[in-house]
Length: 157
Image 1 (cartoon, rainbow, N blue to C red):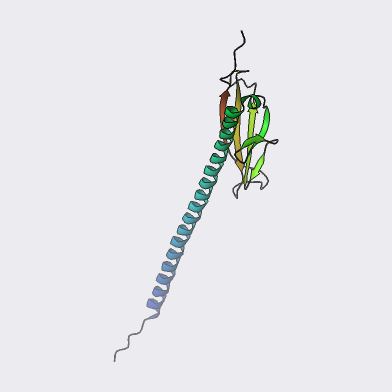
Image 2: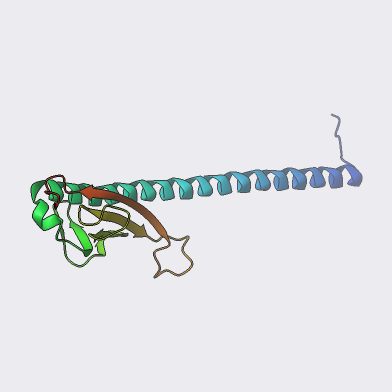
């Protein structure tokens, strides 16, 4: 029976190789974990941004529906409102739905639309997440705007 023994030099070399392999494995695993965390964070932000865009569009849709169903009331609006569960513009603005704050601003004398013939509507949705510096601030925002014209109005002579 032949017994093979390692010299001290070979034992030290094997230990160094094992430590290098372990270090290399830790670096690779750390890089993979960082990539996964970054990817999940980006996916969450994109999901939140898409939801905010949907809420902002809902605000414009509510204003448009109100303009078409009750133009006299709609064109009398001026100020901040909530898109009340997608039904009508009510309240005094800044409605909270989950992490989102929705505000629909109607300006009946905006220079962006023909004064007296239309209203300028801005639907804004803001939210905060772990990326915000101050947890009380809403550091992300989606804003959509549009002019709504009163096509049924009779022009003054």
